[in-house]
Image (cartoon, rainbow, N blue to C red):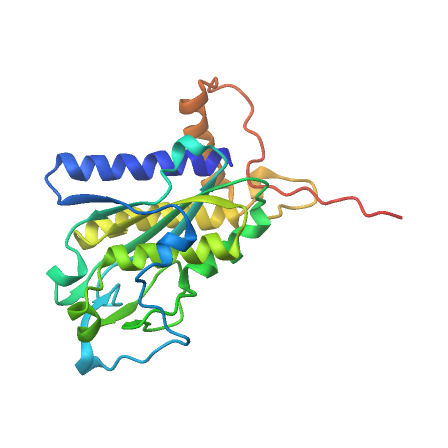
Length: 256
């Protein structure tokens, strides 16, 4: 999807901007095969419960900032399979609460917008020892706990990133490559990604306008206008060129 391609580029520009500003940015290259990704992963047969007194860190607590996002593209050059980027402190370096953004970028073939919600849900479908989702994710956020025992055994964001890659690749054969970005540097940095998250969700959600496809009265006009401006800059479109109905889904003709 061309729109998501632009968002992937915008996201990576944010990371480079933070790097230039002096944020601690680390990159880790993990194996690409599911079999090798699973090696030494502390998997569990069922979700665990982590009490507050046993918690080392909470990621994305409602008292701080949180964002969770999945983007997909058909362009292999936009996704470095197995790469994990960490902006800010890793789990063992920050006891207590951390603002948290979790971004997955998948390179796919034959993927359709209707698959997006399922792909997004699977980022929360993890069974890891010492890791627990604190609440049902909503509004493109994620709130989780990591136990003290897990951190002592070596649980890091790389551990979480590998598990996310396994989840997407196993459950979505169309996902040929997966890259992960974590941001823990500050609430402001996470909120910046939250804006991208909101745009992505609006684009991917099934959208219909009025039967006449009247853009002037469509509830998605603002986001459509913003996307069209991005496409104009990217593709060199004339400002006078008629804007297409970017988010509209025309009704399908039924077979008689």
